Amino acid sequence: MKNSADQPVVALTLGDPAGIGPELIARLLARRDLVAQANVVLVGDPWLWADGQRIAGMSVATTPVASLSAVRGRSDLATPAFLAIDTVQPEQVHRARAEAPGGASVLKVLDRCMDAALAREIDAICFAPLNKHAMKQGGLKHEDELHHFAQHLGVTGYFCEFNTLEGLWTSRVSSHVPLKDAPKYLDKARIVAAASLIYRSLQANGVAQPRVAVAGFNPHNGDGGTCGREEIDIIEPAVRELGALGLPVAGPYPADTIFLKARDGELDAIVTMYHDQGQIAIKLMGFSKGVTVQGGLPVPITTPAHGTAYDIAGLGKANVDATANAFQIACRMGRAYRDGQSLFGQPTSNQ
Image 1 (cartoon, helix red, strand yellow):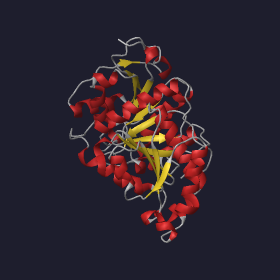
Image 2 (cartoon, rainbow, N blue to C red):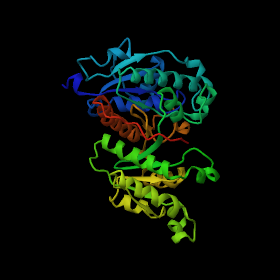
Image 3 (cartoon, rainbow, N blue to C red):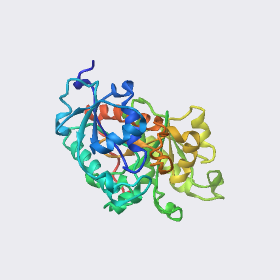
């Protein structure tokens, strides 16, 4: 049995009460091989945890704790800890519906975990799928959860979502903005920040020398300037600056072929210029296994890349693969965080 000092403390949450999250966490915690990778603490409503086990058709033993500060000193890690908190009542939750009580519940649980991370009581957070619409109804003031995390954690540097699929990671220069606005965020500083951040984050995930490449912006990489000059004027200078900083980042490569290099095992990470440039490719390559890592935060936060799957909520059909992958990344990066490795990005603006 591993001692608690050897393992990072990873907090798990149940996600949107109306979605598949509670079932996924039940399936995850039933896997002893996964639980053994961390000092695990589940944070959430007792009734919702019981409902998740019922839907999954399994019973998972947990050890009650009175606070997150009590988790790190546990001696027996074979059984996950459980911090019971009351955030929402059963009658307030309607299966497969995005509603304010469910969104408020998600925010309360995540804020509790982030406070514990700031106090160094936990080393990483892995949350089950949430619903942005429900969260906005429930009090979310930002466009997405990442910006909420960044404000709560006091982040002033660059941050962005990473989407990962097994050995491949992607970051992006712009994210949840209208496509017509994406060119506004295309500048050298943001490309350097996105590439630097994913390079360091891969190192924190155990990749000693990450192979990172940058995608172009225009069709055919701009065709020497005849189809756009962003590659010549912005992206190539950013790649040169990254090299001068000691980061061996390659590119730019045409966006319609760069993922072939990744598929063939030539790359560990791709920096894309806007949301769908990378999302379409990586989800096509493995939608049921993908993970979202909240990059640039001081504490590792991960989640499965798929959503709440309202269409199958309550049916016992949810696939746990992506959640298991998200948990394992949280364990690896949580160990680096516990050992003092910074996960902050470069200072610049974010979208």
